[in-house]
Length: 412
Image (cartoon, rainbow, N blue to C red):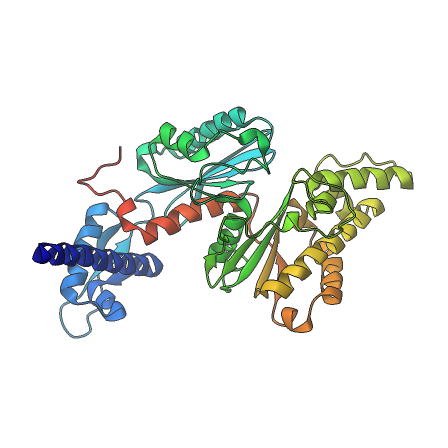
């Protein structure tokens, strides 16, 4: 019996080592795009026989091809292995408070097709799920890709995500979503793995891989939209906290005597600079000033009016920067990230928000906590959160090579 247990333990150990080696080689192939077996062995320290065996498996997935003969260093010319970005595809979905957006990407997260539609997501989950399915179908059709060619689907949601129930949105934040499961709905519709995370977390992931935070291992992404959220990257990984609640900066109180939000707390940041609050403030400011201009009906209209020089809207953006500065100053004092990226529609206002934001932070932060911190607006477009959702699926697959289909294990 003891020998049997030792044999089983040895088999499990060998399988774990092989999986770790496969992950190591796959990530190096993805990063380098083209590399030889000999160079893989040299860079990883693995034996040539181990590299050859794992490469054989990767060739079977279609992820890697033998591309061409490389340059000889004295012997036979090596065969170069090339990572195939088009071997599978990923769908990334942003489930916003008032819209659904979808992108189809390759395995380098290059967007091949995109789709978006206004949807009252918070108030009508059934319609949101229907539109989400429609959006996935639309990007597949636009790119001429079949659902069977999808590696996975990533979804960004406007809610904290519990790792034990990743497809469910938190009822405290979006009460009408109780009983609905995003992951289950998509898995049943498209028969592909689905990965779900908070929208600000995935905004941070997109910035880390492709955007303003690509040179940093520690960053905070602040999404300013209907609500306010922060995605936190610590040492290159998303920090979610023990229950997935980390980063809920919109529910931090900046005025204990302020109004009460849906969460039951008083003076939350989102009550001052969330989209509804900003539009109300802009309307009140314009009426008080006697402005002849129509009050903005969206953040885009608010920013456009401010950029056109409308005084009331400029003042609203200055107010926004000041209030955001309070929340971000607290975050800097607590976590001291290398980079802070401001995202959401308000980011397009640039210095109209960043100027007063910097002023407030300088007054409320310890000098050492901001000495090496860079605060900037996002360099990604309106598809940034959906791109982050696709990146989550890609990251998960690169860490778990078994997710990639093989010729002997065809996609369902």
